[in-house]
Image (cartoon, rainbow, N blue to C red):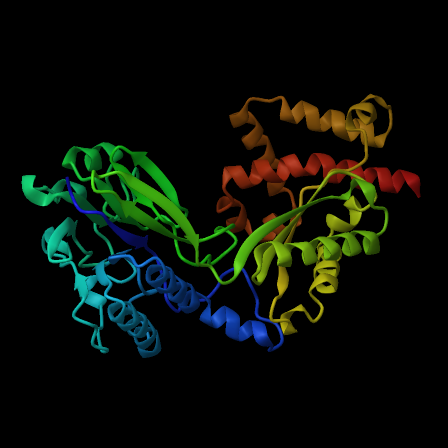
Length: 422
């Protein structure tokens, strides 16, 4: 029988990293909140550790955003580690690709309770509780930004380890990745009881026998990181049973809002409906939100949403003065997934200009893919912009050409239908 203990597993703090996909507007409360979001998220990690009286915090790489982490970021990080140390919590860390050992600048001294694993070899450090070894923690850091070796194969546990934990910053499954690639089988073969991984920003439990866990990052940084972000509270029983509890730490939530436009005929109606839903989101998340508005369905507003000017008008109307609120909900992007109300199947049957256009589209679309690409490039070569700038056409990927062709079906039919209605 072992010893009961608990720890917080977090990774990818990226302290000081600016948000992507957002253009800062007029100054207001949100500027400060966005600037401090990653730091506040780590404060919540330490808060959770203290509230739950854990024995350790495991940080699986990428404490900072890059090689040139600022002094202010180091001071903020050190301040939280000292706060954890005062609560009797030990810290175990490995460096990742964004904070490799050769670029680590520890200008601010850290408490003695902080254990940073070296980059030259896998080492082990015991986690002590009440004078007894509760677990053995293994880890290895990145020396440089890119590590192409399979570091998982360097781990070897000992028989008297008790509960064994491996810490690794890895792109699991990416065989050609420059970020310590490995497989789940590689990790399982080592015999650890828990793998505390980092690098992947979306939380994922790869396996429960043994536990192979990515906690995700502590604060979302872009539209690619939708939804709650945080860390795991891991409770290990005397017989080695593991219980995971996810704790939200993000101070600003990136999210999607989907709106079906079918019920609205006026732009103002859509804006009013979105504004009403936005109020509910603030209450639901209890924190500021950065939102991608995704419009679906078909109806009269399709024409507005398919226009860049129309989308910009809606975003500006929704965001007016929103950056001056402490609990803001900012629409960062409007994504148009709406459809025209034109019945394309019916229009194909009519002997008019639109019908002839759609029949010509079908004839080209039915060609084998290689032949279709060839025909599309030939057609593009005759366009004025490509006649003048031939290099543009040569650098245009096939997929972009095919994607533009697919969009042309609907766009062409709409344009021709409008001309016929004049």
